[in-house]
Length: 223
Ligand code: AMP
Image 1 (cartoon, rainbow, N blue to C red):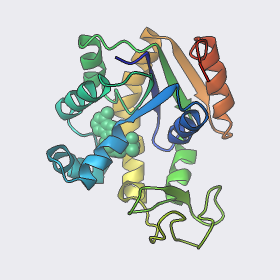
Image 2 (tube, rainbow, N blue to C red):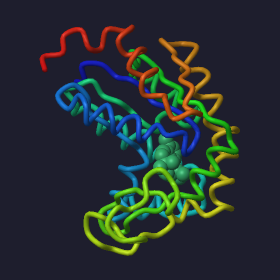
Image 3 (cartoon, protein in one colour):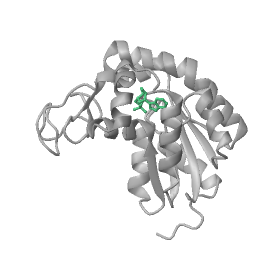
């Protein structure tokens, strides 16, 4: 069982993935990440039953049905032994209720906040490697490929726009966040130890670290 569970929430492209990546890189012995979106993409790449079922929902930018998600998440996260950062769950009131029914009580809930307009711009500028999944921005962004323009630094593959970053789908995902996910996250913030982290200026990391210190996550760090 995980040492503690911290939910990371935020609208698509709020930057929560980068914040989690930095936490994992700086404190590798302490944290483990469980990202529902990444897990689903992995299932799709491996063409598992879950991946095949989830595919069409994901391509449209809408929610994969609750029963599929709840079964997958509750099964997967039981295996963690570290401080588990959970990204992308719960994303509906139904999932929030299932979480309570399973007595999965997070030690903290972090909401990473940016405006919808900024989220749409970030998604429009993102490119990914279809081979290894590495993420970049277009030239002129804050993280373009360093070796060859438009090519992955790690495996040289041509970078592409993620299907769900295309403008129509991206807007749809923002709308789904507002209607389905926001109520679930508001409930989680109110019921558990909630932190709202401003990430408009890209300096959310220091705020996240301060909040983690305040809840004692680093207290018995052995590094
Ligand atoms: P993400 O990369 O976290 O934005 O997730 C990509 C896609 O995976 C979403 O647009 C949904 O189609 C699906 N997804 C991720 N998490 C969930 C969830 N908790 N419930 C339902 N669908 C999800």
